[in-house]
Length: 373
Ligand code: NAD
Image 1: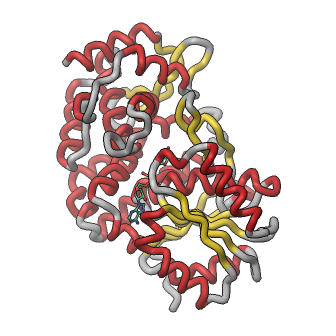
Image 2: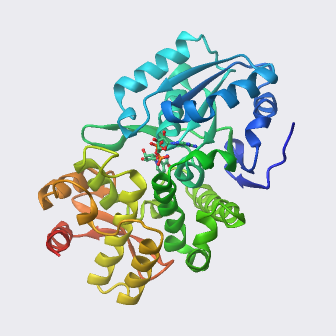
Image 3: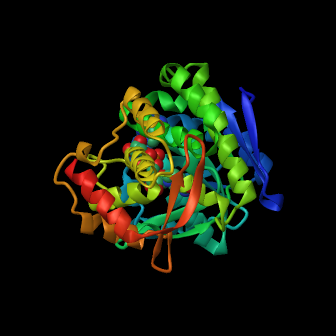
């Protein structure tokens, strides 16, 4: 059985270019994709406990049918797996299965698996090729595209990593059927992000069509394709984040600080929820700095509410953070240059920009107000 992708989005990076294939039943074609990249190669599949339980048998049968020799390495689901010990397990597993440089690593899971497996591929044998098969909405619209890979450190999120582009991104829409509603919503936050960065028409489209996206109708294909096109365009313009790519961090400096203070405890806050609250804080802070209107802030808040995403720090269960705790995480974030903070701020819907001169005192007093509101 072969199934053509409904949409194929090119990521134009010269000799590192690749395609993002989006459609139904694409897992069934996996052996063809592997064969076209490295004929006769062996593969190691990195996956997590949840994805393996839901879709591992399917993938195993497609690989077997295609005559591909494979091994699986399973990690615990959750952000805490983006760690040194789990990285070591994955690297030892890849080397233990005696994969050579012509063989392939398959990242089969959400953003955690993609970031971890991609980083492992980048350092094994000084760089192995890998395919992203993202299974969460967040990974399909964001983390699987663009080549950022890595793990977290005790000092903060994603502080250890490498740029390492995949050979292909294969987005099979059918796998989303087993994703929990909470994780689907969290991924949707990154979809909204593209509209808010620089695609105002897309934000308006989401305001009008979010129900179809959540019902996984045709709107979902469009939302994923538009998100991938937006990300591909930004990455092609600035692969190594020397400039414009930083726009993709809208909401992330606040969001990463919130994830840090919860200790990456997914029962309290998952990444996309942190991004949703972070985008809201970025808009409120921009309004406070007289950059965008209160109507813009309300529009974003209304849409995030409409889909059930959190918009306030107080919605995170458990103890509230102190301002000092959040400021410490913000200072460790990689978007800090010479003491001034770099934030993605906005002049309105779809008018985000990089502000690299934000005084820490302004942020601290803003967060004090947010925590006391
Ligand atoms: P995740 O990988 O933890 O997946 C979320 C949960 O959904 C997990 O429990 C996972 O097991 C489960 N899951 C995934 N697919 C499933 C499926 N089809 N059916 C059932 N369960 C499924 O988290 P995520 O939200 O996918 O990704 C978040 C991570 O991505 C963070 O670590 C973040 O830093 C990273 N990220 C990276 C980039 C990048 O450019 N590299 C961009 C954005 C986010």
